[in-house]
Image 1: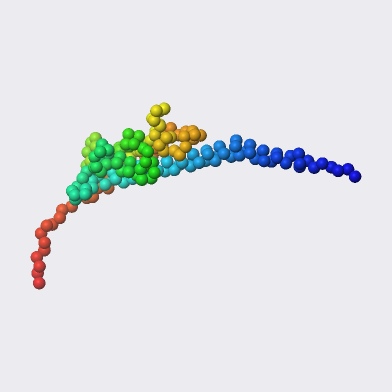
Image 2: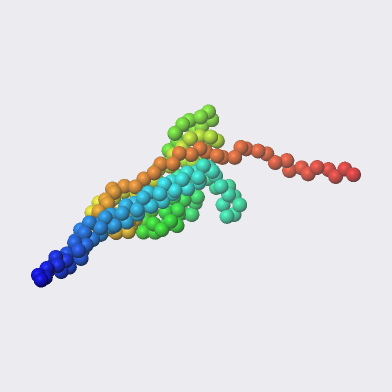
Length: 194
């Protein structure tokens, strides 16, 4: 009787070698690419929400400060000033959402009026100058600054492998000014008539 040699013995390690090749050259880069792309989508959503938060702040026009006095909301102020402003609200949201490496200069925030309804100031550039119902936009943009400092890749993304290389992340939110209508208060108390 003839004994036949099994072919499976000579190929016993072939499946493991093929699996190692597939994992190293196809699956690992695919997983890293998905991971990086997921972070880009997350950062894009964070930037979009920060633009909405800045627009919500701008829509107020003015607010009450900690001392109870009315305070005008500006488009942008120096970071050292603790005045309510659109860029400050955007930066606060970005930091709270986990993008803590971004500096004030890394983020461009633009406030623009899109229409001029009756009663609006010509050439208005600040949120407190708007009239009720006036349409405006807030644009937030984070972009690469060059070889020496890339705020987008080094400060926003998880890895610097460079499989996914966005050059900028931005969003524009459109909103309407929602200032309160003016009113007067009658300071005279009514007489007590029994």
